[in-house]
Image (cartoon, rainbow, N blue to C red; front, top):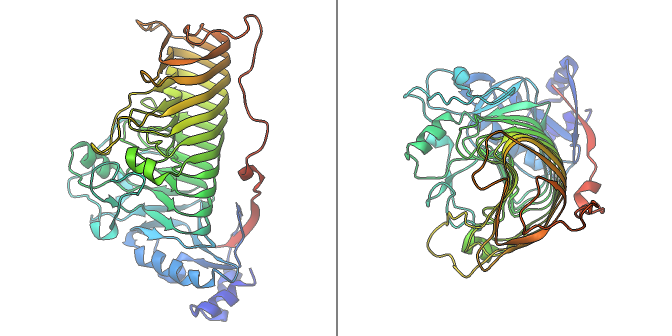
Length: 497
């Protein structure tokens, strides 16, 4: 911490005397794990920030990050968000930089209202609330704080609408070595106004995400509580070497498209020790949409998901697709818990998507109260426009599930490939499914246009998944090697508030 004085002399922000007195008066030393520790450190209040829940801190965030970027080549910098309620518009991060959010800090998007938005928070970190109470009519977002940006090139349009999209609350593009972390500090997206307008078809642009990092490498997002995102919560896209861990994500279970974590056209990714309650897929693995994703051609690959818990009554714990037109391969998921969730691992695709979902390995899944355990869909639909190629058929192959238990399940498996383009190489082993009293008219399994094998699965799968060696457990494949991201070790760093 003795280098802080040097940092501000270099930046010309504070005198060495004022810095020294601040450090001396500090009552809290924060330890945290990060990809890299920083030589220079600052607190948001030193740039005019006010955590009173009323004042906009957009300029404070932007000024702090702009000035701290000057020492990126001199050991990097970290910005500490201290206790308080910090209203802000969108802001962009920089390279060799850490944003640390104190455990008693809450970052909230600016709203155009006279009253502080404390009472407008919609979901608490314990469990999701299923009732969506609308905002008062005079509450709205401050459009001056939310500029519009172009659609992603692998999507060709906004996800909600054909137009542009609102920039995310925290963004970054073309970065190297960026960390967003904290002592479980909170980012509350106050999404109810966005959800209400989306459901009422009052939006002409795609809603913002809480965190979106694009075209970047060495990315860490960890130890945060994320609430009430307007849409997706965490969206790394076109990134490599990504670590996401220790996130608690909460939104009402009927909030639209509040996906938890969406790695999109990313390589070498580690997601672990996260807990998500949402209105959509808890994790959605993506790689572009139809002809735009095919042309961009950037897959999501080398992804590990472990020690993950999901609650999502209307969606999946882990979804692969439906936007998968750059390809998805080498995904490994283990030690997954799904509670009151529509399905465990779901594959979603359609004619026109092209590309592939292959080399998928899942083991150690525990499920309670599910509609489906296994669900694959080849007719998901939803195209960005009419320009997709109906001859672009996806390849779904080498899909492996093993060592799973479930209770209170309505449908064990609904596996629906594409006529003339079957899903192949499906393996299911050592799976016990306790069926609920609600019986499906089609029975526990329903399979079309798929092929594979099973081993010790109860209830017995459909005939398209015959038992490989009756009376003997033949485990489905799961790789024994480590992905490169698992060799990345975080460092113990510190900051002073």
